[in-house]
Image (cartoon, rainbow, N blue to C red; front, side):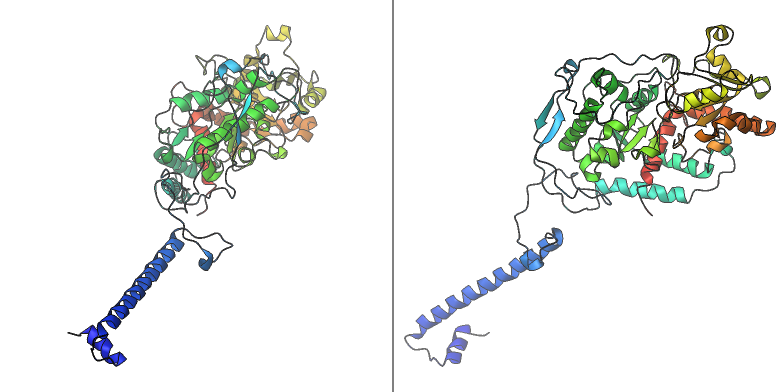
Length: 539
């Protein structure tokens, strides 16, 4: 065994005299200090390298400049963005204006009269001139959101699992087996029935939706089930009652539903005579800001996995004060007009506008006569608004017995044959746009087995991503209104019978049911939201 003290003495030429003990003690002390410094340097370097891999420094710094910081306090494990999602490039603002409106603070204003057809108010200026809400409507306050720790880098975990499930679903849909026969699906109605069936099946197996409980009533969580804007109310009702797709744990959700009603916003926040929808936009901006401050889920994708369902004509315009809501969120709206730069085909969803007269029996009086018992070539009756309807009347009102085109159905005619009976007795039902591109007549025509004739440029038709509208409808350009009868007469009798048969088979996909039924309107809307969300992912 080596005697280190003697070895040191030999190296230094010392014998081991009386003073040797002092020198040896000094050298041992120096060696101890040196070894301690070396160990500190070694472990410090190791920790620094480990920290570099775990938390990279800002892009404008180098490893040499990186300063090891103490670990931040633990945050909720689900605040990290999942795989494929990225936090916003800038941190959330220190102050976010949010509404503190409560039912007692929302003064009701008269809702628009809902007459027989298209009772819509004239278009307003989306950004009204400097409107300030009156004190009784929507007080706006400033709330400071809680401080949020910096998000760690993406990791595979609970959050990432939802993305991985959607990517898996898209791969499965891309490889959908060919469907030769399905008793529940009529292939001629679809662009590709095999893809639709596989996508619907994957939706049933995978999709989970979280519904925010936030939001004051009656603006949120209060569905209206009648009138021409009933689609948003029926979807809200059935979604909030659903137990198959809805989850209480938001960390398991693939989509997040903003449960507000555009009709209720119009009824309670619009200031009569102001011609400004600014109060509605302010509410939505503050509502989304409050959710993004309270929960981490909006900020993970800047709203791209959130959706709203709104049927009022103004629904698209009222998103303009919140950039992420307007650009990123999936907007399920009746006013699906691509020319205005708000509705985005392939991301947003065209909501079928359904006129529900009897909420307790939404399927009342549906059905119509067979093709052989339809004596009227084309029929329309409705209020005159928008750019298309006056042109339609100018060319066809009272000029042709086959073309029953009216501004309002005259009393003497209505006494003999009601509006609904006219639709049930006509081969084609004319569905011109009003103030906006959408019209409840499209679904009414389907209910009464009448082939819809759609006149509205730039209109994205409901469920166009899966349905083949050419199989059961006629789309006429606005400029071709003078040739309308010629176009309709150009459809052969055999083709018409086939189209009307398709309309009758299509009807079940546009029906509301008290309890949702497979492939009905509720499921078709949800499927379009699911399908368009999958467009976000690339394989």
